[in-house]
Image (cartoon, rainbow, N blue to C red):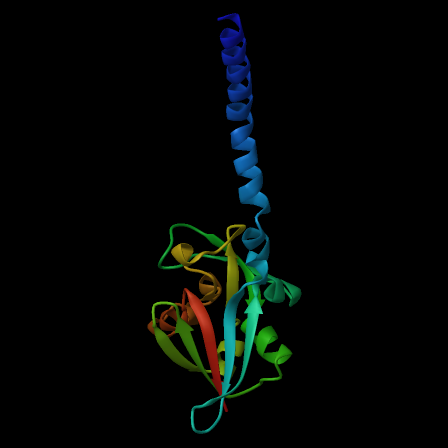
Length: 180
């Protein structure tokens, strides 16, 4: 009987240690898992170049890492979809298009929910449109209007507080189609 009690006591000690260590092991797994580390490398925005017939001639996929390698800008503004001032960080569409060698043409902005709006590249470039991937210091997820939200500094100019500009403010933006 004494041997059985020793085995039970030993089992309890091991069990208590396992229960104490389990949350740490789970936390490490969640933080260090390969797919979590790869999230910055996953594509969040695709740029499609289309020919005269509408066929995609070339496609470029950009990850958060790629977007963060471009010049970053920050704006603080109010939107009609959020409460209070919001701090957006991202890449000016002008900087992205210049980086890609685009200075004119038509853009079709496509969202995850199949919303699409068309705009001339020069309008978005001149209006200071920002491809925001961070809001209030946090990367944007689809639930938070990400992965990318095309925003404007609405507070800076009443010309940016129009239905036309609001319609161009595509959230859940995941693809831009460029036609010349």
